[in-house]
Structure formats: structure tokens, C-alpha cells
Length: 271
Image 1 (cartoon, rainbow, N blue to C red):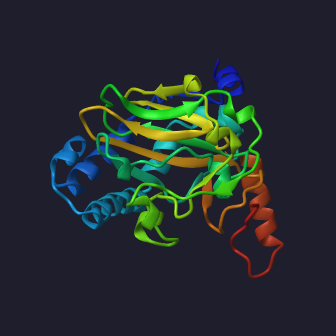
Image 2: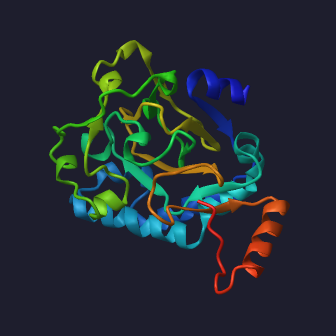
């Protein structure tokens, strides 16, 4: 069922069996935000204050490796999709998207526009329960459609068009250069599907799937997304974009052999 949904739709909604680290992630976010996270839209905040708040929470989650531990606790899911040797994105994206505020969203795109390969999967999951109208919007089957005439386009949103490469906004997942292709520019609205996984569920989809954020609910949408891949497949991302998540016993043994036979090199990089 999982593989069939991925093959036919380009995505699957999955259940996480072990949620202890998800609750730890919740606690860090609650400690870092000035109010309950799903009510952040009720607080008056400048953009730089909001981004700084999100960065503080995200950095604590990364420092404590909570998403990595969460995924290891649910490793059977990733092994089923990618095999026993899995890499995880080193820096997660924490999103706090207020209702109907376009500044907080990323418009239609494929992650393959920005250095991710077709071998990579995206994992997106809510950190707090979603209200009706909030979630991730995908174009079903778009992973099997060619991405032709990829081009840079302007962004009508005043906040997003000011995002620069290397800026805080860019670090937190906002795109510094919006791109599109012919499928997106001629998008058939009837193919759009809003996915609203429950707490303890996530969406796994191909990086080539056309998608965007949505929140037309009455509460802020707090979520995390990041990439995973088999350690041996190609990526066009920057160095150390990925780190090891799972390694089979045979790969661990090979890494030791390579280390012994490679003077002055203590780390083996297969990417």
C-alpha cells in the first residue's frame, strides 16, 4: 500500500509508531514561543522577531538531534522505502504558518528546482494537531510529469521577494529565487489535493512532486519538513547537507575497513 501510493500519487501518508521524541520537540517549541505555538498569529510580531523565534526553537531541536532520534525510533518506515542505509538532512525546516498570511508560505514549486535530486524524498509532519483547512497541498501524479522550461519568476509577495541567499529567512527555508515550470504555470486546479495528516502521522513525497503550503484554518500551522535518501544515491546539494541516519552492519564494517586503509582520514563520505 505504501509503495503503491508513492508510485501512483507521488506521496503517502504514513503513521509513526513511536512518538516520544515528537513530544520532546513540542516541549522545546512551547518553551521557545511566547504563547502556545498554534496561537502565534494572535501575537503582534515583526517579521525579524518571528523568524528569530523560529530559529531559536529550530536550533535547539537540531542541537538535541530530536528529529534524527524520532526517525531512528521509526526506522522501519524508512528502511522499507529506502533500504538499510539512509541519510537525513542535517538542518530541518521548522514552519510556523499563520492563517491566511501569504508571507508564511512558499508558493508552488518542486524541490528538484533547488538542488535536490529525484532520488530524494521529503518528509513533512505536523508538530501540533492541524485545524481544518491547514496542511500541505500537492498535485497528485506530478512526480511522473516532465519539468520543462524551468525558469526564474518574480514573486508578488512583498516579504518573500526580499529574501536573499544566506539570509535568516533563506536559512529557515524561504526561497531566495522563485522558480517555476510549464506544469506549474498551467496548473489544473482540479488536481490539487490538501493533505492534513493527524498528529503522529507524516507525509512522505518525492522531491519532484509539485507542492506548496496552505493554512486557511483558524490556528497557526506548526510543522517540520526535511529530506531523506539512500546513502548511495546522488544529490546536488551543498557539502554536509545530509548526514547519516541509518547504516547496515555491512556498511559499518566497510567504513571501518576504508578508515584503516586510508591514512589521515577518519570520516568516510560516500556522497
